[in-house]
Amino acid sequence: MRPPNLYNCCTTGCKTPSSIIDQISGPWGLLLSLIPDSMLRLTENIGSANGKVMMEYIGATGIPVTFDSVPVEADIDFHFILSFAIDANASGESQNGKFSPYWAATLTPDSVAAVKERHPNVKALASLSGWSLYEKVLHWYDPADPQLWISNAFSSLQSLAITYHLDGIDIDYENFPNHNSTFAYCIGELITLLKNQSIITVATIAPFHTTTPPYIELYNRYGDVIDYVNHQFYTDKVRTPKGYLEAFKLRAEQFGEDKLLPSYEVNGRGIQGDAFFEALKLLEENGFDVNGVMIFSADASSSNGYYYEKESQAFLLNSTSI
Image 1: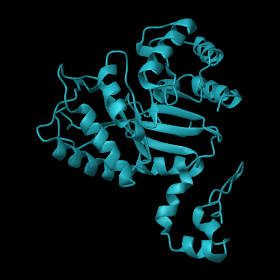
Image 2: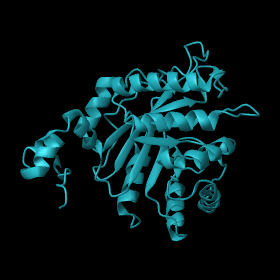
Image 3: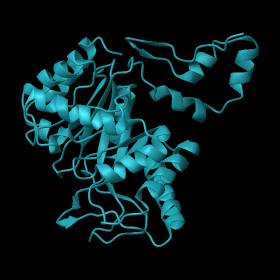
Image 4: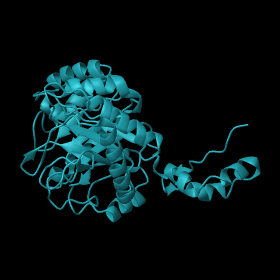
């Protein structure tokens, strides 16, 4: 006997799990009626995106950016990555795992809830750390008590997840000590704990060209709880489609190709303009499935009508890879 389908999605919207259960009779209906609605509601944001995913960093620059103008295609599993949650106070002093939000003040809890209500395929993630807090360059530090750091990080991120309606976290530490020994363990255990306790459903990592070693260790040890690799290809100093292909091949060897997403920095480093979409075509021509794109960032795209978000989603929807 097959359990009933809880996902009754169509182009005009999705029914909530609780409303679907009301229509189910027999033993499955009785069983499902015993499940708390709060648990079933976790399924509402599972998109019908056919494996296509967009990652969009937002809120890092301090400009008053909002979700409202960012184009979101219904058939794309769209992730807004709020940038950043930082283990530091406003002076940049580390807080032993107690993360606070430093993304744009316009990205309020209500605005997150609203964009997820308008677009059931949207998820919201908090990116951890980033390069700097104001003028203070941020570094991963080895906590004196890793278990206490993990406990503090879990509690603070649980609070942020509840307040901001978050679905996941992104790991974007960008500076490391010469002899780091705890990053992979602390972050891997943190992600595992957050997932095991159903605080998050999505975890991504964002290495770049000089930070691959600690991220490779993290991925090798905890790859089963990492959903996507948002490698910052714009730091690989390639500006042509052919160069992008070679960089992608290298990162696919390091992280595997299944979870690796091509990325683009708007008005920034690396490959620029429509050459990026030529690079995506070249990836497909060389056997890579392009099922997602990461863009940094909505802050910059707000000045050009979100051209790269529109074109990236169009590319994904027209792609034959799954």
